[in-house]
Length: 70
Image (cartoon, rainbow, N blue to C red; front, side):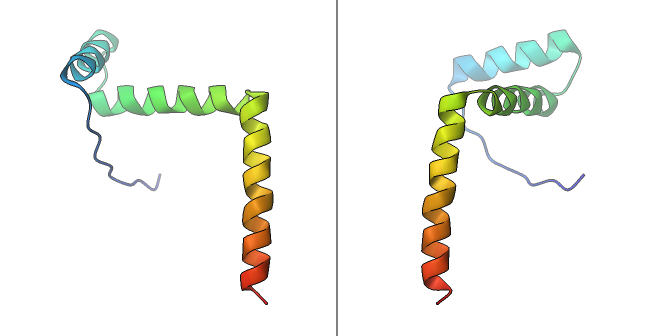
């Protein structure tokens, strides 16, 4: 698996909560954060309004890229 390191700043309360979740689940904080991110991505994939926004973005980007390619 190819990985990238990211810096994540959290409010102290949220950091303490994700640390507690990780301990309770017996995983690292990194793994708990990765799981939370994956859950969010999956939820967005199922959200029709989000999908419509993504399709609009793709069309806008395509138009810009086609213009640049001339």
